[in-house]
Length: 330
Ligand code: LMR
Image (cartoon, rainbow, N blue to C red; front, side, top):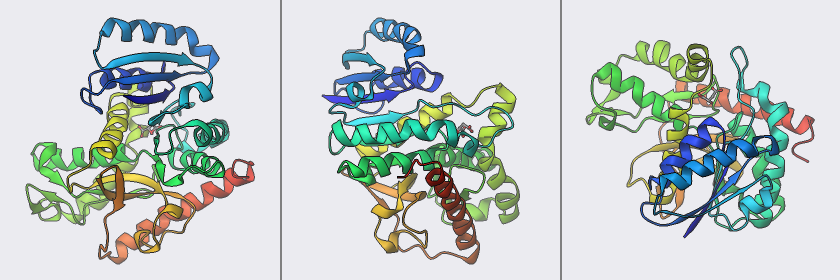
């Protein structure tokens, strides 16, 4: 049986994630115990979520525990989806949330380090996801937890990039391979088509370079804000789906497929960092086998790629300084 903790379980993304976990999206028919973590103000809404999970009558749900105590939620957990956080509103950047959200991730990182299963796979979805994950990894590591297991969500950007290419090439998303998202889940990310293929053909033979750089890159990098403006709230279906894609592939492997994951650079060998300094949580193309992710090795990078990779790394260093200045990285 797997123990899966979900923070923000009564929020929109959490609610969506739970239904799909109950449907076996990540663990197939293996039974799961759900640990639903919420803030005390959301405990009533959480009651309603539990009623619905009971009514779902999934044979895969072995037990449901609802709590506002991270120690209860994370005790022995094999996976933790850290979704709960204040969402951004129209006109804000994700880093504007650092002040209000980083403290949550400091506590959760410490408690994960103290009580979670040593191989617990942690996915941070709450924004600013990379730096929240950095804060969580810092505090978890102090408790002896492997920081490599604390990752942030850029699969949403990866899936958005696939969607943009599929739409333009008029093929199904399954025909697109080897896209990569480098960097921060922010406007400086680099959605990269250099190595991508569409039905086996180089993507940049199908889509011209200017369309990629002038239209697709900014569309993907600012998509979250565009959804907020259009919907009046941040993305839910795509964010929950990407969170589960991230965990499913980490658990089940990618069979050589590239996916994008933001991972703590201090846990990577130097040659796998592609010039990004140690001490940030940075998105790379990775493959996954037996629960271990590996950054795609030995890619020959162009000057353009290096420039974009460095720009996003510099932004993450700035975010790290802000988090440290506010005392979240003591
Ligand atoms: C997204 O990219 O949709 C989420 O990170 C929410 C946001 O604030 O953009």
